[in-house]
Every structure is written in structure tokens, then in C-alpha cells.
Amino acid sequence: MAENFAEWIRSHGIGEVECLVPDINGVVRGKVWPADKFVSSVDSMSLRLPSSVFSVTITGDYADNDEDDSQYRDPDVTLKPDLRSICVAPGFRTPTAFVVADALHRDGTPFENAPRYVLQKVLDEFAALGWTMVVAPELEFYLTEVNADPDLPIQPPRGRSGRAESSPQPYGLESVTEYEDIIEEIYDNSEIASLQLDTMIHESGTAQLEINFNHGEPVALCDQVVIFKRIVRQVALKHGVYATFMAKPMESQPGSAMHLHISAQDKDGVNLFGNEQGLTQEFRYFVGGLQRFLPQVAPLFAPNVNSFRRMRPAHSAPINVQWGMDNRSCGLRIPVSNTGATRIENRLPGADANPYIAIAATLACGLLGLRGKIEPMPLITSNAYAQERTLPRSLDAALKLMTLCEPVIGILGESFIRAFARIKEAELAAYDEVISSWERDHLLLKA
Image (cartoon, rainbow, N blue to C red; front, top):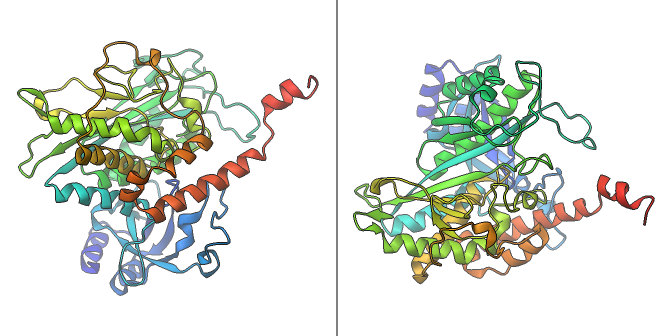
């Protein structure tokens, strides 16, 4: 393998390599190596990181508790870079490459809590059935003014006209051109990094954009999402603004989602979700599994306190798992397509979700539907927001449900779910210490 890396690095004139390791929150961690040192380290399997990187909270603390002495031992994991993910890293003075790595125990077995492995494990379950899963994420994000003081509300940035957007502009072409310089550089850098992007549009929020990725293999698509976020943030800073993938960055604006289009193929590439007669029985079982189990594992696609602020009616964010044909009020939408492109769109995940985990959770729920032959609810043709809310309203309530969902835990792994829950419980405890501006505004002089 080292020879292949060496050949690629030499042909692209690379001087440094950033080895990327997405943690449980989707935050990119890793190390930077000189190219020659990277190649020799791949050959000797000496690329390593402390395993505690998979215990880091979004606040930068460690979530291990006293019952787990790994917090103190903190053994290394060996990094195994995936040659399929290597790409030129745009925007660096020294020619640099990105490569995403898997984490392994010292004996070469996968590290159970690494999100990339959790997703691959679910994909292997489908492969055993002769199925190949195909995904296409749609990722929304906001451009904002630089916000150096977190106590101040976020504001939309000024565009080329010198003015900031003050009203919704869904699909507005003039609004897109307000940020043309940033968008063009994002596209240019994404092309340099060999990302498979489709279209970009202006979404409903002020300075809110959406990028669509081409359909492909799930792990590779997640790698691309991680790299895309890194590129977007860097380009935005270069232009004097922020890019944020928070689920709900502004109280008066819609939230940002990561919609997941999911389909399945057999060994001959034939779509398993649709045929000339319509939706297949396998598709129905898959959706039935999503409806049964997704509400029980909401933290896996809504991982933060802020994630649940996005889920409210009439804000393009579902509150239940109703399904419908071309119905965007539903949590599960069947887009208009020909038979060969029949797919389900999971509209529940936020842009803040770790893509590996959100997709793994979705596929695990669908797999349980197939195994249990779970029939879905009737298709809905009306406003799904008028139906009962079936998603939890807070991260606290959602975590309690997740830790009791034994069928999904059985697929994703008890060790992973336990590590994920510890991280989220630590973040909740930190959040509970914060006194908000709402409390100061309404309680300080009145209570």
C-alpha cells in the first residue's frame, strides 16, 4: 500500500499529508506529516493517535468516566489511511494532501467506536444479503458575519451589493450571485479535491446555501462531506465571513439539514426499491424499519442540544416519520423519479450530524425493517405537520430512548453507543451550567 501512496504523492508533487480522523461528533482530528515520513509510516504501520480522540466532547473535554480506566491508560490506535480517499488539499502554501484513515487496535482489528467503522459494519450486513447501498447527501449551511462574541446573535453577511439579506430568498439566483466569489472558490477548491458535487442552490434562510452530492458509496460520500465542510469553512474565512453547519444558528431563520437520499442495488446494479409495478415489498419493509426505529435513535442524527431547535412545524424540518410521495412535510419522502432511481429521502438529520453515524443509523433501522418484515404506515398525501409529533423534543429525552433501543444497539455496537451516550451526557451537563440571555432578559428583574 505504501508504494501506491508514494506514487500518488510523487505524481501530485505533495509535500505534506493531513491524515484526517473524524471523531464521534464529526470533528476532524488527526496529524500532519511530511510526505516522505507519511509514506514510511504507512509502510511500518506506525501512524498512531491516542484512542481518547473518540471520547472528546464538542467542548473539547473528555467524556470517559471513572468506571472506564481507558481514560488513564489512553492506548494508541493505529491509523490505516484509505487510499481511495486521498485528494489534493486546496489552499495550502505547501502542496498538501488530505487522506481519511480508519482506526485499528494494535492487533489490526477495527476500533469499535470509530464512526467510519460503525458505518462500514452496517454496509457489510447489507453486502451479506447481496445488497449494495447507495446514498446522496444534501447539505445545507449558512454564511454569516464574523461572530467573535458568542453572547451576540448571529447575523447574515453583506453580499457583493454591500447589503445583507433581510428576507427569505429560496432558489433566488440574484441572491446566489451576492456570494458568487465565495461559491466559485468553493467549487474550484472542491474540484481540486476531486469531490463529486452536483448542484448548489440558495435555500430559504438568509445567506443559506445547499449543496447536493452525486449518488455513491456511503463511506466515500461521508469522507467527501467531511472534506467539503473543511473546504467551505476555510474559503469563508478567507472572504471574511463564517460558514456554519449548526442545525439552527438563527432563531428567526429555518434550520440546516443534511437530507439523505438512499437506494439499494442488487449485484447486477438493479434498483431494489422500485420496479415496473411500483414500490417493491423490500422498499416497504425498509421504510417500515425507519418509521419504527428512527424516533428511538434521534441523537444519532440530531446530536446536539441545538439540533432539536430545528425540528418544528412549517420550518422545513419534520416532526414525525410519516412518508409520502414528493411531500416535503414528511420525515420520509419519496422523490419523483424513474424506476431505476427509486429512493427514500430521510429528511430528519441536521447539518450538524456526523454523516457516518447518521447514515449508519438510517441503514440500521432499514435493515431491522427488512429482517422483521415491518409494514410501514399508510402513505400520507396531506400536511404531515398536522400529524402527531413522534420525534423527541430534546436531546435529554432522546438519549434515554436511544440507550434502550436494543435492536439498533445490536447492529451499531454496544461499545459505540455507550461511548456516544457518555459524550452527549457530558455535553448536556456542560450546557446545563449555562445561564442564557433569555433567562437574564425575562427573569432577572421579574422573577
